[in-house]
Length: 310
Image (cartoon, rainbow, N blue to C red; front, top):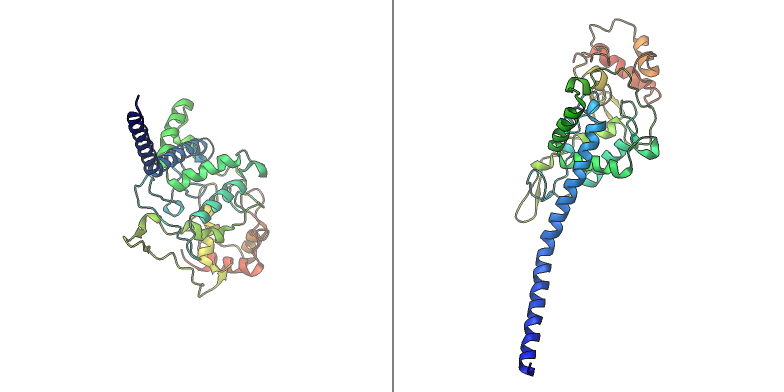
């Protein structure tokens, strides 16, 4: 091969190398996005299997709530360009009243690992006596924050077909055998948890062509104008802490909590004060005095349930 041909071949190889490198770098961003989407899908799949095996009895067949809190809720979603909803990328909207993505992730991971005092939620983290590793806790968090309840439904049907269990046999309708969690390692109490459960739905957020974020206002965190317990109005405190067992309308829930309506509360104020403060032996009623309620707080609750209609 003469020198001229060698030069032409070398130039051709050089252009081919440059073209291949250019294609690689131009395609790298989409390749990484596809890889991340695939990885997130795999993690959510594992989270769905863990949910089916461990969580449905309290949180509902599709995470829509039961004895446990609803997890299938817009406030817990973290959305990006590649997600189940096809929504535009949602920036971290963290504000004092509206937690951002990192805060939501930390809240969910802490709740699963540590449990929640004053509820039936136990500590699932291995380091706190539970059965789930940190990786498995993260897989559950991914399931919840990506809203992949379709995977839960799919794997739930598979599991039920194998075991022969019916939904009525899976979901708890009674507190028999359950135990209220006393102390735990979590830093979120029921009141602090409200801002996470009431977070703005990220699907309602819009990003203008100029990059401006347009979002509805977060739920108001204005200080209550009337009697308050731990910084929130008494009725808000009730919904955050007592409604799990006694119902949001205070009409009671079978095998959980009795009605707390003025026309059925015929005992003395002291009776209800003692019940709230010290709990009731032989029931799931916890001692709220041990959960941080002061005597003044408890008196406000007694007055609320005895005199305020639902």
